[in-house]
Length: 294
Image 1 (cartoon, rainbow, N blue to C red):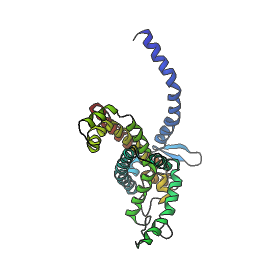
Image 2: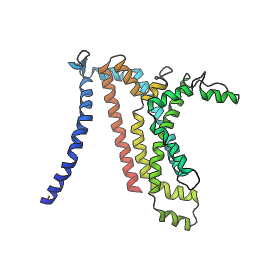
Image 3: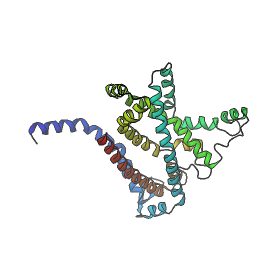
Image 4: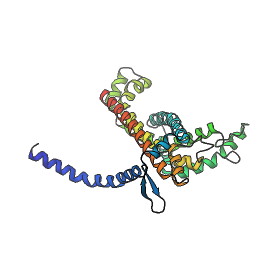
């Protein structure tokens, strides 16, 4: 490497070093501390590790049926919520980017859920879906529909969590998709129109292939956010009824701060982190292949 190359490299690291140190302090220490207490018994008086127990907490985590159930519940939530949010987000983005009167107001309204804290959103939706005096059942009663136990039935409770989360996060995807649509090359779309392509052909054969890398990247970002699902489930259902909506982060929280099983909950957190990193590697490889293809 030449002298000027070394100087350029040093300058780059000079600018990036403060951010690296900050990220290491904010992320590195909590991860290392969690890893440490997952192999030790925690002294609850001082919150310091006191006795090495090896893999004992991991064995307890792997043999905990409720932990297994929480992983399954999280998987069900991800399988249904993410495709729904992606389809709705990009579909609505195509609609609000078309030329029609009032689209500016609609765009602004779609951003409102992003300004609402997840805890507040869960609480408000819990009131709206209350089986006795909730607005949804009241409106359904006007049309002769029977009352639905949105939060008391296991299947409906999971559907409710997905609905609330979709309402909360679809606007984020709309925002990203709308920005991506504005970057599409106009000459390519005009050439497709000249060749006789209608709006469906332009969407399917031009816009979507050009947006494929953006769709993949948006999916990865949203998947990372969905893996942290906690607050909406805590406020709306508290993991119930039974274990129907007890997502893994909520179960880890309950084990740590209610049952005071900090070592076991730390082991569960490490397991979830490893699973997340593996899936992230797979998704990023897929995203890179899409970028190379398109």
